[in-house]
Length: 387
Ligand SMILES: *Cc1c(COP(=O)(O)O)cnc(C)c1O
Image (cartoon, rainbow, N blue to C red; front, side):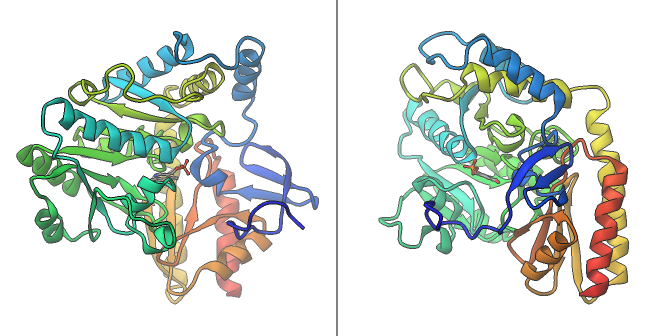
């Protein structure tokens, strides 16, 4: 009997090692891993460069307090701001911490300009921003909040795509709109560029902040460094996590100069956030993702993958309803519950993961090779045939 609490419904399999796009199970089987720790292992398993950099740092210094200067973190923050809209960064350890810090930054900004009544955050119903008390109520999901009351106040919600409701929900107390640029857990739903542009306009007009949660879709997953880049807009605050650590727990909130002015000494902190070991791994991940041609390759391969999946969809119009997503954040929406489909893929040695709305989520590493995509396509086609 497991001594772990039963808060997960785990698949009955464990792994002994990973290499690139593959995982090797204790039962001797080799799996193509297109789950990748839910978009976390952005460079695949045991990437030699990440292993080298982690080992190098592990012999120097793992952890010092944020009471001291941490050069590895200074460097990672500098690189993140040089490449993006942001002017400063606060490091955390997870996505939920990053989104919660984003909420704190937004509220603190209005407090610092004497508008502390402007403190409500407008979010999408049934989105996903993490599992802390504040972020489950930000997510506005009945399932996630059930039994965890009293309710954490300060969040309002609108239905994804319901622009009328969105506009109606903005009040004089609204501090920020917070959305996932691509809804991950919610079923790989992409917010189109024109919507992002409109959102930016609305926020400017109403003098509220725009928070784009890029915890899942950021750090190259979309084919751009951030998924919102395609729309050419600039958000005010962006929480990131998952892909930036390549498997090492790192979260961060990126912000522009205007909002960072509220985060004065003592307003926020984290014991582990931004420690030298984590920061060295983060820098190593960026060394790879910032390499010339890296993201272009992600774009090209993902275009191929989407096209081929569309073909499979046309071959099996009674099974697959829609191919969703951007870059290597892909959702196969089925007509019926996808649990059995995900299991069949796994029986055929392809690992994927579910998302809402009957979606099979496909998350290859950003280092995936074309022949590995072809292998996945072959398995998906086979499962469709036998379904
Ligand atoms: C995964 C995720 C989070 C929460 O990240 P954790 O590291 O699990 O706390 C927040 N927002 C989005 C969009 C996510 O996909």
